[in-house]
Image 1: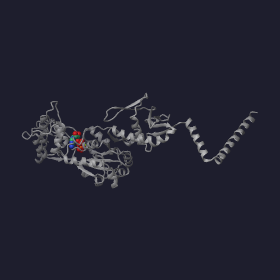
Image 2: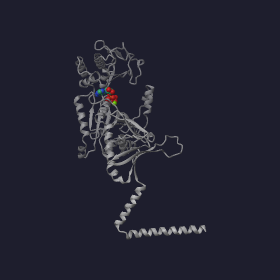
Image 3: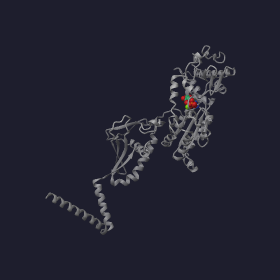
Image 4: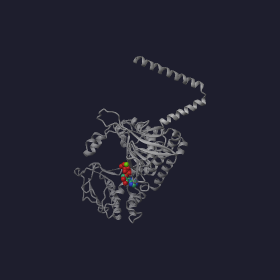
Length: 537
Ligand SMILES: Nc1ncnc2c1ncn2[C@@H]1O[C@H](COP(=O)(O)OP(=O)(O)OP(=O)(O)O)[C@@H](O)[C@H]1O
Ligand SMILES: [Mg+2]
């Protein structure tokens, strides 16, 4: 009975479906277009009644798994301006300039927004890794996405106007609240670990500006002008068919302000700094990956490029004897540098040119070196390094800037003497700055100036010693005693009363005392022209 009944129901259902399909075919053939459209609208209303909301999802990472999606960041920034008044869980973050806390939604919280009378809701979805297997490595990063939901009937307004509005506002707020950042590349072994980021960053707060930079005023003016022309030159570069990028080569002896100038440039342009540590880059492919995620309005910095890699093709391996000798800490550091990098000169040239040509937006690359003559001409040719800037020893004009910075004075009776001494010898701005710094709470300006005079006189004396066949050699501001290995930097001898801080004897570069090597000083004091510092190596 039961079996018969089931068969009957089945037959009945089949007949009904067939009937329905035939009706649909007849409907399409018989009913006129306008009636069909009307019925379709009715169907839409029916769907809308039961499923009224549309959802659009913006994932944190889309496309490149190493780069946060621009839309996601802009939405995040936009939503930071919307106070999540009804949320119980809110995230706070300090932003620049306003120095105030901005509140944003936490995971799984909702923010409502109104645009042109249309109400929408934003929701932060965080998906934890679904894997239940036990892993000994670090956990896989969670996946975040912003979900925008709105009524189906508002689809046009949302997709055509609201989203554009959100992106535009996000951009503006980002510019207003931007915290300048300094990035450095993570070693590639850890790329999977650092939440997929190739670069890690810190907030960049460097007080240097062009005003406080001790530099010849003409050169300073020229550099500022160059940067301003570049940053406002979008149309010019487009018209000229040239990628909007500019390369600066900063070269000169240690302590002449190369790194300081980079900070001044970044502050002037309000750009982020991407400090590329070449020794941490495995090969050219990694270098390209790093380059591909650098956004516009960035300064890419390669410091001391001649020390990072041997770009002539040979790897920069330290001499065995260099590693064996010296301070144990320095030795450890030097050993650590041994990580083999396969970045080649051509890889680096591509990083500079290939990338820049391919990406839109302004970027600056700054390369610094103490030894410009060691660099391959291809690396520093115009077009790659468009502007070569030599930063040299402290001149009188640069000294005046330092005197203003450190002592807050524009003139002094001792300025004349200092001017003469500066003309006679080479002292880096770093050494001048050190001599000018207050060393006591009394903040006595005259003592500081006398310190500098003494340091300059001492430095001059050393040059005289060189002439007196003491066996010392001048090398980029460094005096070396070839026979005894006694090394001393120009201008490093200074103290409150002009006495040398180096009372025990000469110090080697790594800070180890070399008294035992036979380096001996009379009384350890610097006595200026008359009582000359007695130094016997
Ligand atoms: N031109 C300058 N103007 C102001 N301060 C300077 C200048 N040059 C050097 N200094 C001071 O000296 C210190 C060292 O300078 P900086 O690190 O910029 O030198 P550098 O040329 O990068 O040296 P290195 O070649 O060793 O990297 C800075 O902290 C800064 O205070
Ligand atoms: Mg430097």
